[in-house]
Image (cartoon, rainbow, N blue to C red):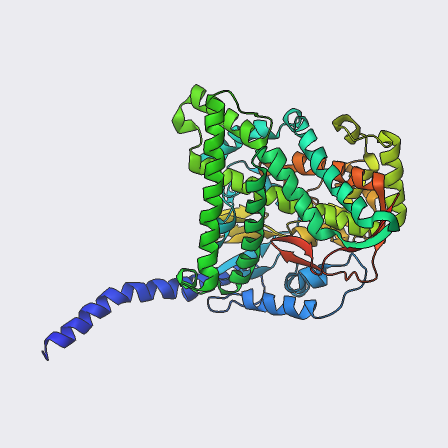
Length: 515
């Protein structure tokens, strides 16, 4: 027994040692090696902290910024991204922060942003999706290489402008229900206070349910509720994401997130199988996104073989992405647009005059929407000041060069959309002011042909749903302007914050006036 015990200890030590070395490399040696490599090139930032990097520092900065009241201003950087704003001030625009054990180098030079985003399969890929991100969305937004190319090719036809025209009745039905609801809410009083944020969230969920999945409307509403809950749970979980293995513990949050994934997938699988049966019997209406996607996928299978088409799991993931991205982006844009037009009533008047000149009291149509120049300028300026996604990230999978910087394997690149959109060096000293006239000559003229405005991304991987979101936003805003004027309520608190997308923390309380 005396000999046996030491032998067991030796064997145990031999078995455990590789895991200890692996953990040491992951948690300390690799991050410090990358930190030294970046410092040698003059790229500095807050020091790396074991496992957490700067995540805890970032949450502390956010907590402190949220504790202070904010005035009615578009200077939102100190509240929304205080840690990154301070990092750029202290260490320069090309600086580094730490997302857990991964260094993130800030890239704010438009020419370098162009290089990072321009390659279809290029050198700079999206970071592998974390297990948390996978619980929210996967699909086209996370794929790379040949798989991304295949999915993009199959999905593209569904988002062609001509196909989107066929969805306009669904858009119009949802928007008409919203303004009718608001008219009933105001009633005979002619004006009444309303928090428009929940209703605009419901509107965009309604649109994606109808235009995306047609007759499966009730199931769509349930998916929206589940994804909204999932977003909140994931933002809470980010604070513990740097702790190895924590996500696998049977905590209440971990169990609920996995349960939501299963339920959403089950609902979508049922919807897809019903549509497949309807398509086989010739009873399917393929004017919605699901129908167009399945039609395109079937065509790809017939022409190129099953290996070149998407399987049912792929279709489920793309549908989950439709729901999340389609609802989140547009609800954020419409809410901030109504808030901003309440802060700038003269632009609200100009937008309404244009809508009435183009449509009168008639229901907006697709051709008329393309003539709304002032409305388009306003939407672009709101997207500049309040972009739904405040960061884009890419990463290196091999040693690479970017603008004279030698980037080792494993470095992430952070494209801080919000900071770039508010950068006085790119937009002038009035960068924090609402001036839609910047876009009177289009995006290229406003940006001087630089990549300094990219609310939907840029290059080959630009958001495939951009046209969908813009048509929906123009239509909804036009119908609202036809029926209402609106102003900020005294109870409104200006408090932008991020839960996946940029949102009003305490709602969007406006006073609606029936016209």
